[in-house]
Structures are given as C-alpha cells and as structure tokens.
Image 1 (cartoon, rainbow, N blue to C red):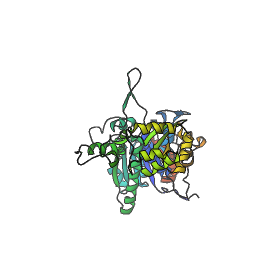
Image 2: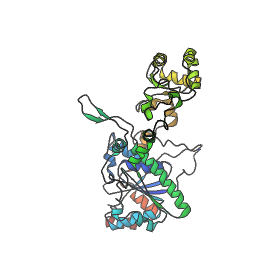
Image 3: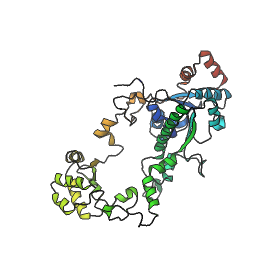
Image 4: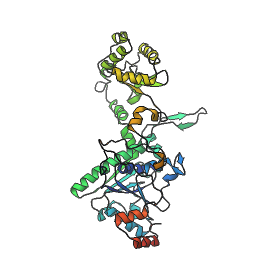
Length: 410
C-alpha cells in the first residue's frame, strides 16, 4: 500500500549548507519534506569532495543532497536576500549547515527571519557548536570523532601515525539529532505560533553516542564501595564499554569454518541451549554460569573448547543453528560483505543506480503498511531555481526574468 502523502509532506525547510552537515535535512526529505537547498551561483563544493567520484559527482553529494531542490541565489545581492526572506515566509524551518553566524552576516540571522515568520524554527549544525573555545575553528568530519575519543591513532610499518579505519559517528549522529530537534520545534511552533532557535554540534553528537564509555569512566571516579562491576564478575570492575569485552568467552567472536561469528550466550538459558544443541551438556554442567550477564571471563579452557566447536560449521550454518536452538549467534560482516547478507537484502534494498547515480541505501525507518517514495536524484547547481520560484512564490516569467537581470540568481 502506498499512502497518498508521505509523513512529512507539508513540511518545508530552507537549507543553506556546505558539505556533509547538510545530511540534517536528508532525513526530512526522505520522509517527504520539501527541502530547498539554497546555493551560491558557484554551488556547494560537496560535489567535489571525498571519494568515490561517480561520473564527475561525489558519492557524498549524491547521498546527502538526494530528494532536495537546488535554487541559486547570490546572497551578496540585496535582491537575493529579499527572495530568501520571501521563501522563509512560506517555510517551517531554516537550516544553517555551516559555521554559526554565516547567514547572520548576510542579514539572514534568526532575528531577521523571525520578523518575517514568527513560527520559523532556525537550526544551526556545525562542527563544534556556537559556544566554547573551539567554536570558530575550521574542521572536517573526522575531527569530531577524534575529539570524542572514538578513533585511536595507528602506526604504519614505517612508524608514521595515520587515521585508522573507523565508522564515522559525529557527521552522521549530528544530523539525526538535528532533524529530531527541528521536528520538535515545528510541532511546538504549529501549536503556539512561536518558533525557536536551536543548534547541534557534530562533536557533541559524537561524544553523546559514546555516553556509555564516558559515563562509565566518570562513575569509576567514585569509590569501589559505591560503584562496582556486575554480579557475574564478582563485582570486579571491567574496562568501560567494548574494551571490557576482550576477556569474554561466552560473549566473544570466534572463527567459523569460512569466516567469523559473534557468540553471545551470556544468559544461562542461552548457554544451556547452545550446549544442548552441540551435544556438549558436559560443558554446561561444568560451567553453568550466572543467570545473567556472565561472559565467563578469562576461562581459557572453555575458550579453547568453543574455538574448536565453532570451526566445525560455516557462518551460515551457525546462524541457522542460532535460530533453531534459540541461542544468540550473529553474523560478522564487513562494509563490503554486508550487502550479501540476507537480512540486509530484506531490510535495506538499494536505491537503483539509474535513478540515483549510484546504488544507495534507503532511510532505515519503516512506516508499516506504507511505502515511502524514493527521493529524487541529488540536484545539479540551480537545477530547480525557476521551478521553486514558480511553485513556492508564484512568480511568472516576467518576474523571473527581472530577478535574473538583477543578478540575484547569479
């Protein structure tokens, strides 16, 4: 079934962005919002950033700018500023996805926008936010992850330090939190008639996503009489977060006959199911473990037994075993192999290359019994200038011609 209107139809966002932070509105566009990307006549150089470059355009742009309309305005031209304000009158939100104050310097700060539309929600997304000693520093996405303590330095064979492979966090989490904030602000504005100004730092988002480790370290500053490990570890403290997984045995990665699997039988019930399933109840009787959260830390004898057992089946056979015997065993994929996983193929069907320029992942959110429309391909610079002026502002040919003549459109 396809609903006549996607969930965010009727939401209009004016976006002024450079590079990856523009992803804040990608999530909204995926859900049906009308996102108008206002660009300088030269365009956002996101189209030339990172790799791969697909038929002359970056993958970053193809993904982040999908579903959006591109309108060019030379905001150094007073007429262009007037057009921007006209667009704001029709909008729910304005996104400044660049250094804080960039729009204000052009006469398009929150105070100016609020005067023409009191309900406007104004959201800035930047690297380090609007306050603090780093607020004016130039930066790129990896900076927020190194700042947040997520990327340990690595060294090559010649002793040179390099950026280790890692999953980017801040550049993705910041836009998600920002999109959530925009929706919250719009809901309130529609109820009360009052908009608001908000901001999100991608660095803050990276740190927040790692709250478990940082809060654990803070908790460990308290005496051990107050903060301990868990019961199954005899209350001995483990290293925070995933660093505490190294010594695990019942909760650990193992080699299969053709790859790897993650074994997670930390509850006694799951451990017993596993031992029964492989015909080794003797292991359960010898090492029954605690009821919950027992990783059998440092039990090398058990680990050797499990190492040999897991080598006896393929990864796919172990996944089938997990389903059949009700004991948690998970696939271990890579960014390259994940697309071959049947769960991935069921849940995240690629948007096709012919419509988007490259195979691309869809929004992971599912609306039950509805099919979200696929977003349009990321726009070329100014691709929708005339269409937006006609559709949103109701302009005719003469007015568009006059704006072009004034230089407002670049």
